[in-house]
Image 1 (tube, rainbow, N blue to C red):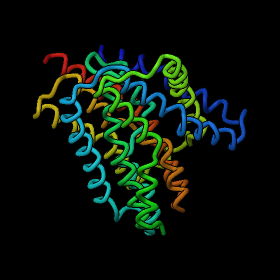
Image 2 (cartoon, rainbow, N blue to C red):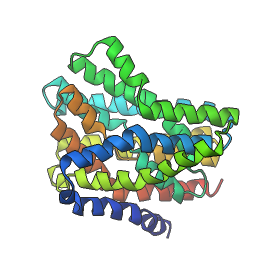
Image 3 (cartoon, one colour):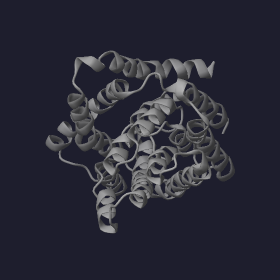
Length: 306
């Protein structure tokens, strides 16, 4: 059974998340925040760069994936705005929650694509490279409207995002078939291998494990958009446009990912309700333990026949 096989494949990742929850008290909050910062600034950028740069990228693949990735994020933006009235009264608090509709957890994405018959980390790195700038532009712009950041501060925050710089750098290297010298590439690859385990442990350590009990009309709608509507949209687009199965598979998985675990950090930086965002992150992550295997199973059934 495809679903069972996919679920078993994801179990090690969710066990690491659970282990993070058990280890929560072993490290201080500052230590966990330091690990998050290490992942954000160094480890994940290394992983994204290696994933994109380690193999040649067909320009046609980039041109096909980019518009669909941007369309997926835009659908999340629009659908999230539809539920505005059910959200918090203060716009800044709503903006912090609104970003959950389109931001994505890169760590789980790079794990999930390893279970696909078609597609892998190379295609996911391209999707992330195209998605990071737009996702951050949407999030920072929305939070800026509710906060006090100026235009150039917003632009700077988006342009200097480490995920953006690493992803685009890797995509450029892949497109040009460039290679870093081995003495430089080897330590970058070593850093990349540490990214996913540390990220999964940190997700578990910072997660509110009782979040599902706090599902209400607003948070339920946000979760339905992120885990249901977006992958459904991606599946419909893939079936209509009929891209290469590797591209179609990865795009659906990309759309089905829970929201980025760092979304609460951005919300906090702007003064939005951090607890609301942290609850939504936990809800989408916990629910994705069920929804993500379902979408991967559907992808395998649909694209294995093409």
